[in-house]
Amino acid sequence: MEKQYNVAILGATGKVGQELLRTLSERNFPIKNLKLLASSKSKDQNLKFKDELLTVEEVNNNSFKDIDIVLASSGEDIAKLYAKSAVEEGACFIDNSNAFRMDTNVPLVVPEVNGEDLKNHRGIIANPNCSTSQLVPVLKVLDDLAGLTRVIVSTYQSVSGAGKEAMEELSEQVSQWHTKMDITTKILPKQIAFNLIPHIDKFLDNGYTKEEIKVINESRKILHRPDLLITCTAVRVPVFVGHSESVTVDLKQTVSIDEVRDSLARHSLIKVIDDPLKAEYITPLEAAASDPVYVSRIRKDTSSINGFNLWVVSDNLRIGAALNTVKIAEYLIKYNLLNFSLV
Ligand SMILES: NC(=O)c1ccc[n+]([C@@H]2O[C@H](COP(=O)([O-])OP(=O)(O)OC[C@H]3O[C@@H](n4cnc5c(N)ncnc54)[C@H](OP(=O)(O)O)[C@@H]3O)[C@@H](O)[C@H]2O)c1
Image (cartoon, rainbow, N blue to C red; front, side, top):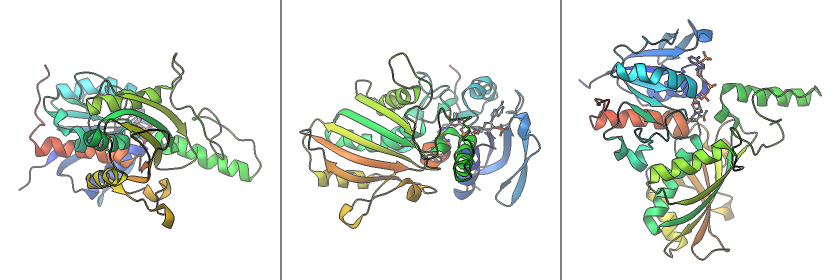
């Protein structure tokens, strides 16, 4: 019989947590016991997993005894607070937050791009930022094909990327607008309904936002290209689910548009939908609740010798978070990497 594992979801009541529950069920992950953890606010709440109702527990330092794998989506502070106790209990802690991504002892992984980095992990493994996760499979294909020399990314990020309260804020603002009430803003920095906001996470001294720097640094780490020239502008848009990216690349070697299209289409994560004359291209609404990284609008950049423009869309809660997290866990099981040394 297939071996089964004790799994905990830390942050089970959140947007990513809910998607983790769905993904574990859809992929029939080999679970012996599933423990749901969140804050005191959600204690004793019941959540459905397959045909069972499971009760959420408030997390504490003893929550991880006998757990093999923790799938964490409870934000940076909580991850920092509990990762150590989980790992000391022998659990692999796969984290969705920014807490450990750039730590040199922590692999930052999209399994189909750099799964091998999981070898020699020390218990904590980081899931990339949602905008990075959908970008790096595309960049990896192009780097392998013709060598990336420069990347320019502009993101169009949905409100679910900022959690369940940001989704509620968009809904509330739309109904406030319809009923001619004053529009209230709590979670996002400005009104998001009928607007867009070039400000995700906090501003840094160099004028970039922290979100933009995450995309830059994480892409370099995952691709093993610390030298890669890459810049990013991150924008929040009034879309519930699905992040879109306008990506411009410069390549070292000259390749044809067909070579670019065929190489992208061969990658297991990528689906190319690109026939503009038939209006065949992807939008976030169409990408939501599905697994691929979609690539459309592939065209030669007429302002550069070896440049291409692409449109990349994906469900930020899936490949950008829950699906990638579960795939990391599956990789650890498949390659017998659940046991680790703390040094
Ligand atoms: N949304 C995305 O597209 C996406 C993609 C990649 C990575 N991420 C990252 O994943 C993490 C979660 O994002 P999300 O969108 O799921 O956020 P969310 O919807 O706001 O959910 C946050 C979760 O964390 C739990 N939590 C908050 N404070 C806690 C505490 N003191 N102790 C224990 N649990 C606590 C919440 O539990 P309660 O319900 O009890 O408060 C909830 O389950 C963040 O770090 C985010 O940056 C998100």
